[in-house]
Length: 272
Image 1 (cartoon, rainbow, N blue to C red):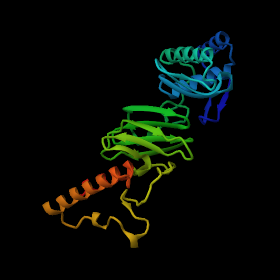
Image 2: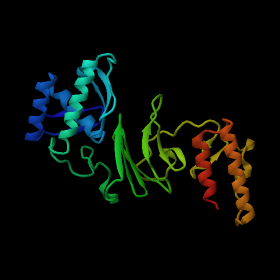
Image 3: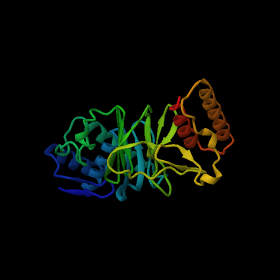
């Protein structure tokens, strides 16, 4: 059996004998096609075995599943379908650690659980996950993101990344949570691949290559005072702290977004 899953951008080779038995068993007991079972296996696997985002006509279209939590299907009032999805995903989740369903794909390939580039010697990720057409893995000082089949690796600077999320709407902008708040992935330096992540929407500022927010029209520079003088001393350090306080006031007043404030704060603190 060979299945091409366009949504995940993954080509899966033949099932192992154990994987074929599992698929046949689940297909017969849940009265759905083998392709639908494989689709759900991929979805649960992409969610680390604890969650799944799927789109299967046989299972009510688009839906979500979380282990021990909520189950959502297109037909939201169909409790029987919810139970089917919950039980199916639960069985798949239990089987994934114990059964080699598909032949092991070489590390560094898109079909592998280790899809990030092996040439960078990133090691073992602290955490990883995925949703929709995005997968991510967090390493020491590095963040690997696969978006629509394209892998980009970022320098995480001094951020302690707690998770990556994809905004829903007109674009596919990604953000991550750190000790500085919620920050756009596109503000991080790229160390591998081409940056395929659209920047998060900004309100009144454009972003330069140093992640410093500046007014798009230099003649109307709003924050010209944020430029730190050369040869920092105690006075200039105090000035920077005053500027950060002013930026916080603008954020609280709604003139700056959290992303804009956090990025500018990081830049200013780096000058001290």
